[in-house]
Length: 587
Figure 1: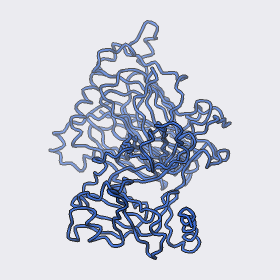
Figure 2: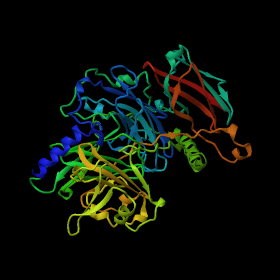
Figure 3: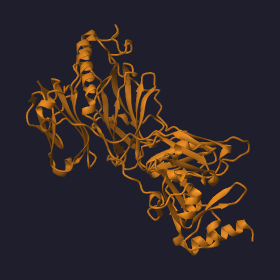
Figure 4: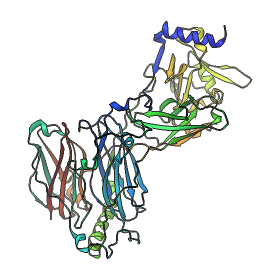
């Protein structure tokens, strides 16, 4: 009996006679061939952002709402949204990847001095929205003033502009009539005084939903008008879904990253080649993808990660292939029309004052920091069934070869050539099938194809070894067990220089932040008096959930006097848009 026939028989025996020996991990991979697109509703994106006039040294805060075009409720379809800031010459100032949780996401951008004054567009979309033939994305106008650059010609007023309109504020008045009502303890406040804002649902449960709350000083001159949750739907004029011939897969389970392999030699096929993808580190992500006839492959990243690079290698003769990651598609911006914000000489005092206040605020940022959401520890892709060997619990040996011999049971290194070695793992029920397939050997999330290269690796750098003895499938690739090696520093990927291993940049989603909120009722007065407070943005609360009929938000005013606008945007649980504004005075 030939070896090939023997292998086939072994696989049949494993599946039909001993299914308990097979641990399967076959995560759904979104490809154009795996989804019936006709049954998937389109999406709309609304972005509530804190300001349409941004100065250097300030933060643009925003919240993303992804809405189902079919139900008008928050969509749980796409798990990732994209937010871009586009200049008038159609260049991208930033492109953020935003994790969506039941249609909700948030982000921010600190405006550096490198960004010039001008008029910009804030763009929001999902990859699924890119399939429509016509432009189908959120767009909001943002004007930027950079007082630290001498060239302001892009926003300077010209003889063609109407000078009288430039000093007019453009705010639409809205009565607090609808599903929600805003109640304040008073309308005029002193510096550093507590404000009590009560949000009341007039119609009981009908007003409950997910909202974002901004309290910001009003600009004294004309600024771009922002879309509200009630008016943003005017951006989406076509209700008929006309798709392009080449469909972009939606991001159903998380980040859907695509790449492409190309052959370095003629007549070498790329179809069905297996590509190992690792996001390295202590809580690594590991997948194996398959390339199509064009060499394109997809992999899902459905867990949060801090790493910004990914290690990619073709399984087998990897030195015959080149690998690249493909950028997530952006919409066509050629038809964008920009708001024309203009500077006048009368604006100079207000611009100077705000710029000084920004410098003071940024100088004290270290004592008022935002905090990041802690990432949850990930479970390894093989679950919690591994045998764990913490090497500090044993007498340490110099190399991996000796460690496997002396410490790790049922795993060893076998010599198969003059200088060639392979790892071996014995199954729980020993059969001749155990050694037909090699084990999956990993160090800090990196698949080791050349086992010989690590047998003499310094074991003093290793924290633990985990062993799975079952026949294992990672996607469609079969292995006899798993040997998972974790180093103490978790940095093996930084030193490896294997042929065909590519370290590629993978833009990661923005981390979820909890924004600092000033509390003068919890700070000693003598300490507070020594810290200046010229906040222009008194409150940014991007994830306010109204779960009862009444809820109260407390915040404090600053030393920056003037009129402040309270803006609440969002959607009820039934999908009804809510947009409410109120004004308070600080004097």
